[in-house]
Image 1 (tube, rainbow, N blue to C red):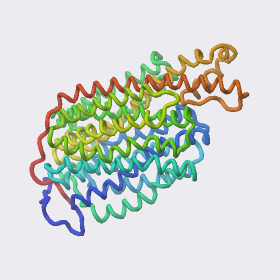
Image 2 (cartoon, helix red, strand yellow):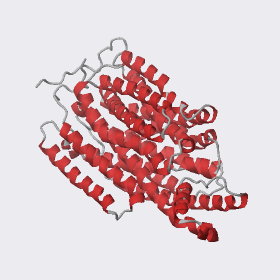
Image 3 (tube, rainbow, N blue to C red):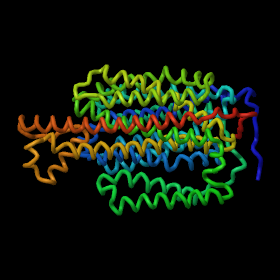
Image 4 (cartoon, rainbow, N blue to C red):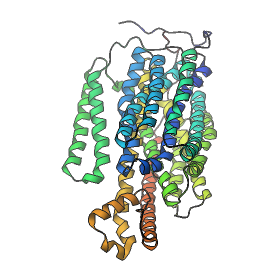
Length: 521
């Protein structure tokens, strides 16, 4: 078994390859596609629902299917980068993501769209941990905080552009165009990445733990599938309990196998460092609160408020734009104050912002949502930057791809769980209160019709084609019940953020990387 090859980080790069800031720009171009895709899809969801006759469960799968694929494959993708080279895996991810985006834009049914979103998630999984590993290898340990702050600012900029670009495209072109935009971005990222990136991999790794891949994939799928289907089946239903039990059993077998495998998919030694373990949990909790709560805000803006997709994007701009400012500040604060105070403070700010969101009314003005959005930007950025640094920065260099996979996987797992669980919470609350808001009108509604009304109300809509007076009754009831569900969802997110703030108090400043990064190629 060969040893890792070390290349002096200060050696002059050839043709720009391996230069730290060019590396940051190159990997950012690829990740911008993923970030744009997340925000523009949220803006497009209400239009996709109408044009493809999608249900709320379908729309959840447009988001959750993508996140599930990311979550299941990210750690494997990180290991593939360690084994075959992070530059190679990154560029494959960029090309595949752009091509599947093109295919999604050409799809004409919700089933095909969901399937392609899953495939898109697999390519996104190749891209993200490789990007972090390339950053880790390009920047010395003492500059990693600065790099992560700049990384967060670039992600914030792409997120800020997403709602505006998505709103303009959905309103003036079509929902398909929000996926087509990834194609030119992908071409630029591919060409620049070929020139700017320097290959690196851990040569002491010789194979992929495919049994570990199967076990981890099975456990993750069982968990998210149970949570998404539970509102339909019932939380006490045998099928729901069966999938949850399968999650526990398969997860236990996975952990046992990882402790015995000679080259495990997820080396459990990574988690002997408390900061790595806590950082992983913090990333899950942060994403749970953020993705889960944000999923329903586009329906609030477009369904309840009746805003256009562009106006919805403008309403969400304060949070994305705020991250441009907040992320570099977070990197500086973590360097000066350490991760404990910075991350805990960020989660407290996040909890307060979520609480303000839980007080939104049907008639909420721009400022009512803009203020908590800005607070979210300054609350979430320290957690994103800090958790990323303590996970990736504390891992052995030869496992930087796996560490990047753990960080991204934790984020996607949290997002998938947040979307599924808070979606179930909102739907259950709507189903509970809608008949009360309908009053006497509900007595004349058949059970199967009421189920359809509850599904529409879960996205802030009323059934079309009704007489004016009846339509107003249903519309008011749908909006009020949706707001009750939305409020409860944000209350749950507030509680999750407070738990994360308490957990962050146990984080310790991680050790800095010693020596030069590993480069090969």
